[in-house]
Image (tube, rainbow, N blue to C red; front, side):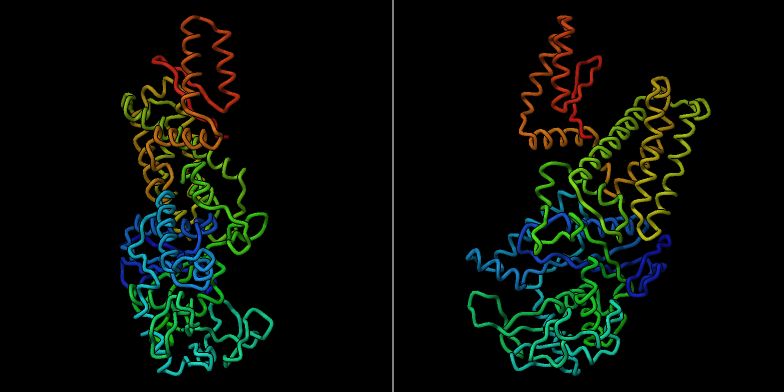
Amino acid sequence: MPAPIRLYNTLSRTIEPLETREPGKVGLYVCGMTVYDFCHIGHARAMLAFDFVVRHLVHRGYDVNFVRNHTDVDDKIIARAKERGTDPLALSAFFVNALEEDLAALGLVAPTRTPKVSEHIGDILDLIGKLVEKGHAYKADNGDVYFAVESYPAYGQLSGKKLDDQRAGERVAVEAAKRHPADFALWKAASGDPTEPGWDSPWGRGRPGWHIECSAMARHYLGDTFDIHGGGIDLVFPHHENEIAQSECGTGHGPYARYWMHNGHLTLDKEKMSKSLGNVVKIREILREVPGEALRLLFGETHYRSPLPYSTEGLVRALGALDRIYSAKETALEVAAKGAPTPIEQVGDPGKELYALAVAFPAHFDAAMDDDFNTAEAIAHLFDLVRAVNRFGNDKKARAKGALVMGPVVTAFSLAANVLGIAAMEPQAFFDEVKQKRLAAAGKSPDTVEALIAARAAARVAKDWAEADRLRAELDAEGIVVMDNPTGSTWRMRVE
């Protein structure tokens, strides 16, 4: 049986043990993006939060059926397509592909399914039909089909909002066609504009409302009820509240999802990052400057439920921390491969300390992740290990005989790579990627750096130490760290 995991359930507002419908299996639905532009790092925060969740569930032995949708039919998509004079579905298809490229570059595990709204119109119509048949939905005078919130007494259970509070001029827009201000559209009547996507239905030609889409796709792939539903904290109301209502009323089964997980906002200048506010930093802009793991580390150092302030300085700090992790991994791999297998009791106190820390690491790491996916604590354990590796590795005599010490250290790095997606690369590949991206961001050429390195090497051969020192200082001023060794000189970008 998989190990016990505890998670915060927004529905109950408590930490609960994970008890799945089927032993050893998890059905997980996460709301994806509405794709009318390149996605920003606020979206990445949500996607990465649940990537950590999925990775840890798999690590702990669960068979995870992970569904994350693409909303490719929406008012915003239609408006953007009209601005550009293009077809809405072609526009959304372009941005779906762009998003998948970005998420792959961030190292996200691919979901089991990534359904699109446009591919599930039949499922949507079926669920709306059941709601109309059972009296939970009605066709209004304007041709739209609305869900009748008063037909579901438990409405508000997730958000804590009461129907009596849904007054005109507050959070819910009032339309004359609605019976109650909080009623929401399941099906929107066609506007008559032939450029807008539309489908035939029993209530006339039109397209689905936003909320019904996720209920229909989750039902198609996970059933009438499933284990975990996730998304950003901004989706609690009205989106997830409405999902519960329409799903449980339509299928007659509940709970729709046993657990509800919500990640906190990524903020910029204390405001939620969003396309509507215009305060966005796009994922691909960041990935041109740093490896994707830098974002993984930056986001993982804050618990998924907490708000996360973003700054360029914070990203640079995370890149520097990631560099230290990879330097320690490089040391561990080198010593494990080349060091003598000296018995642990003969490697000295730093070696014994490191060995004990590494052996205990999996248990401490798993305990942190089992406790509501506490990546921040798990990463803190990783840095404890990194510091111990550095203390041990600074002693050349210890390095020469530390192969047995480094065995469990290498295993610990593999665990972090599998669950957090951090330190997942070969160290040299990471250092090379940093070189490439940081040089490009600074407008510098690798050939120019190599020429300076070669000139310095020639000066050293000629014993022109003043020139060698001058060239080293010039490189240092450009953020280039030169490392001399018996076979020559190598270099890296300074990232702190």
